[in-house]
Length: 521
Image 1 (spheres, one colour):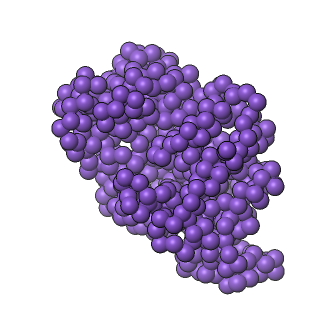
Image 2 (cartoon, rainbow, N blue to C red; image 1 turned 45 degrees about the vertical axis):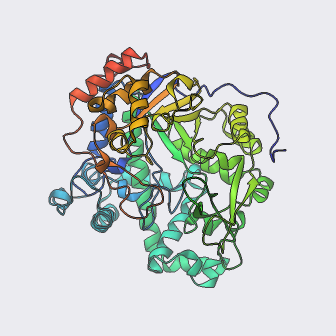
Image 3 (cartoon, rainbow, N blue to C red; image 1 turned 135 degrees about the vertical axis):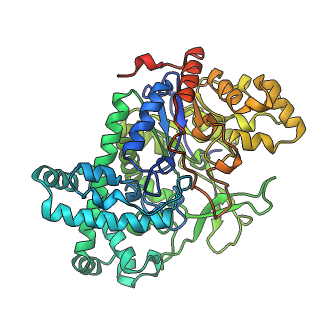
């Protein structure tokens, strides 16, 4: 018996999803540029123009919230806020919020790798200079826009708490909130009032950063809409312990009186790991969330759908059943399966928000109850071609086994590039991959792209690294490895007309919805 009840009738796939399209997977930090990390400036617009020329209808990215010391998009400081590292200095110059000389000679950042720490230090100085200029020279239109942002109802659920959290985080030299002064840690009203008064200047600055992110994001999204491209965001199921989200709503998470996690997320031991994976995210108190009508989740999804047109739901299986690990345990071995909220959560989301343009990340340890939940909800799943060639005729990732209600990938952000993957295969898997794609070793990246495009799946998504034919040196993330991830960046000259033309031809051949002729001039 499952821990969730079934809807009366499974809904059809969301009408808000593309009928048949193609997209590029590229996190904004991987865009080229002069400032150490890709941002929402001219390079984002250039990428959108290139994608439109390539016949693409979707830009998929990872979570865009502010990140912690690891710089992982999946270990964020907030699931509501935007990452100030993505704010474009060039756009600030255009808005009169920076002098051109302030960004004329940035440090000599590596062009092919994101240098998060150096870029963050330099950009913070630039953004604080912008804040000073805004307060002394900001025009009426910008000031009105700032005040409107602060007062907007969509910010009410998170902005004041998040900006105080960030000011406190700076005050406590980056230490986790669970080590802060007891009154602040426990959010005692008088302690919070004193903190707001003492840190008012920093709170205002943090609010300004979120205003800038929102302003530039809206500008970028407007350009995407003009070009007919939908933004495909990412919604991780879990949040980081050291986040504003957990600090503000400690009652919704499995914590003790000192704020330490009593139960954490992960996955059980399997063929790949004898000890499983202990992710460390605090688990939800689903009973308390349900008692509130899942209001926190509704606001979270509402905020993310305000930013993106569709969302990938990470670790979808956790909504059917999740692996609960005792907080004291060092590995995942001691965990147990616990029923998730299932249909009840999604019914609440649909009642509040209407049709949900979601895609389920249903990879990994997928059991019948997970498949049943996804089908009941009418949410498309994911298929990854790199997982297809193990020799099993029933492998769901094989192109011939795909169904229309799936998004098809050559690889995800957790996979190696196609070239890097292919180079590491054993002879049997390599042979099967070539037979199934009809390809050759020297053209394997484009052979896999063609196979994804020809799939019956409603959406085909390709990491930009595969379009560029890059090898393992361009891999974005290695799961379970703490260092060296998330740093790949596209070369400034990489987005040329040849790749766009080749993709556009495949879009036409596979009838994936758009051709460059459909794009505005």
